[in-house]
Length: 354
Image (tube, rainbow, N blue to C red; front, top):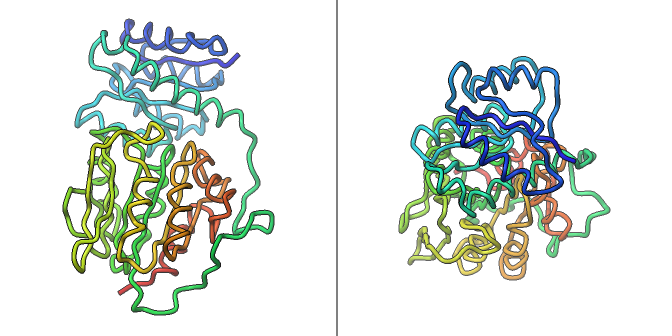
């Protein structure tokens, strides 16, 4: 039986969340708290498989609780329940920076909270958190090991400064915080544009882009339909929309669409990678970071059969969830498997600067 702590100042919302959790007969709500202070007292003496945490509460907010847990080195697997507002998205980004595992969008009214969509989203986040908690640590892999099959094409380091590149990054659970260890380390004059698919709902990627832009030398922005790709700029797929790249004369442009989700994902990294098959870039640097599932693997496999690619994937020990990078590595597509702190160095060494 997996045990949970639910933290929310609304008695009605606590009841809804508890009912959703206990709809799975393997899950049990061990304790409830009406604010961060009550939750802090529980977390000082007890451990839970996961904590569902509201942000805006009296006495001690969710952010203040996360700060206190970080200060006192109290470990907890926390899923933030955030409202879909401008302030809510900013606070959610702050919560992820402070160590929250994941977040779900909390409905604005009781009817939506009782609906099937919130039920599914919350249980999916909980299932992921519980799975990661139960997984034994995997030994760190600094470079591709002999136990992994070789990539379909063996490629060396960059040999000509005249080659044109595009960097395509995919990430999911744990991605917002992990990106803070990658994008700020890229030089402003990196010799490629960067396409980025981070699994997020609409309303949050603009805040993510703004925060990463503040921290980075490269320009980071939420991608806009039709804009031309430029070196030294990171284009983040808007939450809830697919991002593709299209050749346009001698340049390339972003094309966003609202096609149905693929594998329940929109944006979907496989769709981004598939769109690069027909691009005019001579080489695609594929980077796969922490995330649940295997999004990106099939797209990279298709790319490897049609284009010159170089694949960098995050290692197990530095991943919040070793799902997406693991799938790429096990498919034999990774040229490098590196810890998070060296991903940016690997990208820069391969691509170069202008």
